[in-house]
Image (cartoon, rainbow, N blue to C red; front, side, top):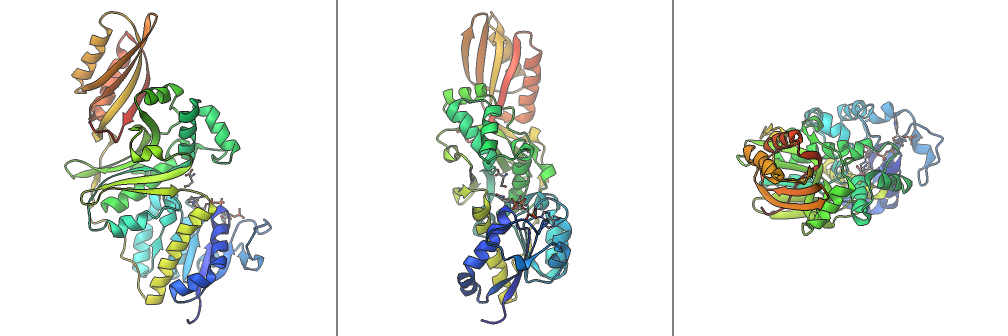
Length: 429
Ligand code: NAP
Ligand code: HSE
């Protein structure tokens, strides 16, 4: 063993504090695995007076810019957000440091530029913790599945929304009641917008799509619908059809291989699908590859220690490269596939229509489906006096055709309300 490798930690919050603790607690093992000891050269925070259990106050600094540009062997960024994280990471890369980050928002918006900078400086940029926290996922996608052709990824990549949907399913409660419970338990943030409206999942979907399909995909390329409009009625309908509702991040190759579609939205899946059993705040990612078939990754997607585990894995990989004088291959975007619009997505659908219960209504409704090239798979009618609920599922159709069908149904006088429309995934049609 020779001189220690230096690690600078930017951020000492939920993830940063756990990273600092694990670096200290596992120092001997890490040194043995890397071949050289690691020393924490500094921890940058905003408020130096905050009590931080397990953090040596003598290494805490508020001069974040200086620590980022200090030329440490590895800089860990766990501040989050776009700025100042982007400027700090650029400064670290320019100073010749390898960078490990958990910042999905930054990777999904400026990942390509940061990768180019890292490559030009001959250093590593790793971000395993940015998607699905503790789950080893990005490295298997980049390395273990590198010889295969991924066709589709279906992921539950947001713990907050999975917790809310699991409770809605279990108790038949509505969204706002369960959101309040999730906030009281500390699962959901006071401002839950990024989670419940799908922005967090969209950033993760962009990162997954980029890696799986060797194409630059940003968060803005991802079609996004949140889960705040999922109703107790949708949940009851799903249950009656042996389906469950999940907020899914989906990245898929088009059938003709000419493009990718990346989308985040609530979806019904069969209760026999492996993702259906992923409950509470857990995450899972289901990958369909041509040779491997179906592969699933499961675990904790958030929390200080679980996320720090992934960060530390990246630190060890970057440190080993440092010791061996090498870097990992650069991010590969060779395929340059087009990101196609949501209208091109092909899947099945569930519709819940509140209609007048009178002669000719079913015929008028089915006529609109036929006119717009959507084939009905099942229809169930529950009568309620002069009104009825129609629960309809369809065979696979394009999203464009389904949207046009829904627009036409809304104009029918017999349709009092289109009370629910949701995609159905993972079903054998
Ligand atoms: P956090 O608890 O809010 O911690 C952020 C840390 O950054 C705090 O220590 C804060 O300092 C520091 N900070 C903020 N602005 C700063 C500035 N301008 N200069 C220096 N330090 C600054 O956030 P977190 O939950 O640890 O998340 C960190 C990153 O990990 C984010 O990118 C997040 O998306 C990602 N991530 C988090 C989780 C999770 O479960 N929390 C899971 C996966 C990925 P003070 O402590 O002084 O305020
Ligand atoms: N807010 C995120 C979640 C944290 O609920 O999964 C991990 O990115």
